[in-house]
Length: 236
Image 1: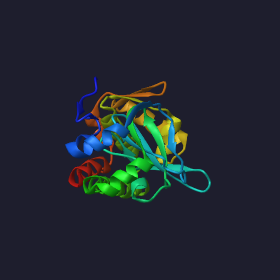
Image 2: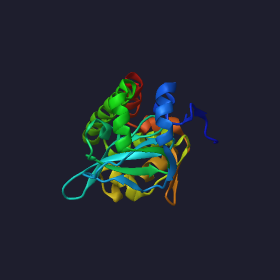
Image 3: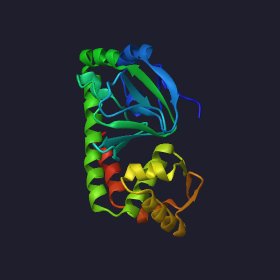
Image 4: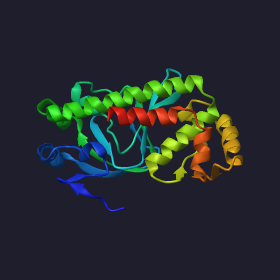
């Protein structure tokens, strides 16, 4: 799909599309748009955040990393959001690992420049703080989901989220990636993928999941899929 623009800003990213003309004029000259490949790590836990990213499509995963190296996903960011924005508020280091989960295009700006814009713009501060609340809410729901709900329900919830972000019924995804996102062994992912496939909801072949029946997949998902959508809409 060809990009569409308003005030020189790509409309694919919801936050950028919401900016006033005056703020857009100040931001546009400092944005660079580029593709990001699946599996690319934008920041590691503890890295200096030198760039702020506004996704146009695809999906970024935010993972908490433990001392033994194990990691689990706590939130995802798509075209509705931004990653690295807290660098503009004097928090220069990432507290999570940020991975490109689905291939994407992103507009980026240097964190140093973004910090100056944040200092001078109440509008931009409000937008970023509001979206940070969306991420915090998502992290709380995901943390509860990881503890309270079975792997199969979480697997279905994650696939629905990924499909929404990809705007497609086809999601490129390896079992290794899925295991890390859910914080389980690969064998557990294999077992639940077989069960969900046998139900007729999906078809899994060579690192690609095809959603055949979204309604059936939603029935097997936990309540958190709907909760995440409702909370995001409420906080938007």
